[in-house]
Image (cartoon, rainbow, N blue to C red; front, side, top):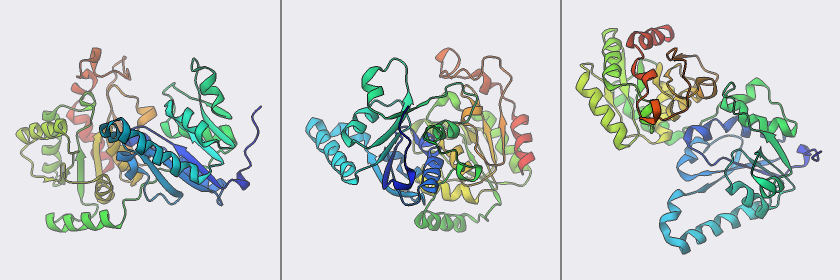
Length: 356
């Protein structure tokens, strides 16, 4: 039996989440719940540098530490120097508790080097004595896909004796004053009023999660015919830019094009002002949920029970394909998902109108 954690005596804790943007954002309730249980404790987080905006400004966060994936481009000596600086920063914090929320092997050796009194990570079969001996506590990593990813993260706290109430399970994302000011200026420039436009974010880093361009265009035409103002956003990514070019070719609806122009914080500030968000399974969809914006999301091969919008008014639009969610990169890993290709425009429009 692992020793109980004396939460009232904790001074500092570190939460490690080395994953993509959406994965980091759905970790935010862990910070909230831990701080609520141990208000005297300084709660830090360690994430990849590009995902830092997902937690920056979180009211429960004391310090945010980052690992830059570009360190690998510095050469062996530059990378070692950067890693050493990070380790010194983390050691200086003298953590009492480390919470490692993924299977990432870095978490094991890092926890050993930090030597906290208490630590927890997923219990993983086949990892051997090194992994298990790196942590004082373990929790079951639920991979059934029947519960939301937020709950999977919170299972780490439950294993330590914290079962947070519903109010502490909300996503938290703080755009910041600079981002909000930037968006206020853009809205004035384009004549956009708060809660009077529909935001569409059709792209994803994974093309097999995207709806065909001509169907997105048809949806935009239908929303425009209803008198809706449309704003389209996209990441500064070549694949998303190509998708948007194809959408432009097929639609006759006017729209405000902010694609590739916004930081993640600015995207969050814009989404907070939207009347409705329409998108696919992606980080911007989780951002919409965090900002409390009603959300329509199209799901194909990925699991909507695990990754759907969390604690926000929403509609999930998918098909009844018996094979979904398959978790594959398109049908037979072809990068094309039949469950999305066949999704009718009318179904997505109906979902949007229910929320509008």
